[in-house]
Length: 337
Image (cartoon, rainbow, N blue to C red; front, side, top):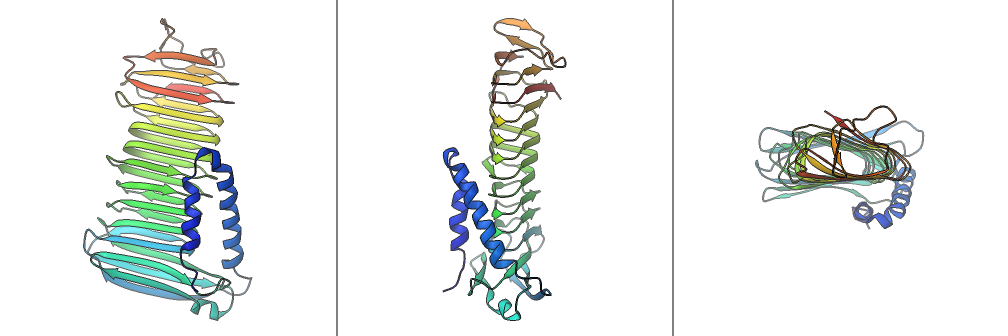
């Protein structure tokens, strides 16, 4: 029986776990990573390779998916109406191991699906994909152990891995970017949909992101978001800091929560906001003039003095946006962009 994508399907479920199950999911991701590494990294012999190449007409608004178990995936948007698939099977085990791994392609009706199929559980083979699709193609890319990178694809994009990093750039309709053990980096997003960006062990970084809503979550790592404009942001880290730099939408809602880390907001002065900020063992300070408790308090951050409170309800300008900021053991800083 071939070992296809069932292992990865099970593993990716863990990336959607609730906060109460995040620690078991992280352990699950570590177990998957170690198991895949033992099976597919091979011994210290000379590397042997086998190449696969194929081009398939898909049309300009087709759907493409690629599913891998061990190895990197790189997908790039280009011109034309063809999908170009180049793959390299690699092993440091026996030559017979390469033959036990097949690349299956199912195509038809504007759709191309690529899968890596292993007929032996100990073949010690990884497959690295380099794929070019028409820029407007809808793309789904998944791997168990490997990095996933998608660039300049204008159609909707979903990129996921268990053990590895996820990077997307120039993908304005990105919908999902997830990892269990690895960093997630996204940039140049412009969508009227919601966007889900999560990892369990790794950092989450976003640049030039415009979306209706944005969920950024990690257990162990920092969350850094720059040049962002969203109606709703929910950013959470248990062991890491949160940094947000960008504009606020009028009547937008922004929830930032860090258990063990600082939270820094660098904001344009064009939009007013109401802020509820709480820290258990840190300080709260602001470079923007805030109205606190009904009194005008030009409490600009001044070294360690800050506002000298651990809980505030305050307003800047017209108070049209809402900030809910919570840190257990870190400072909260609001600065001027």
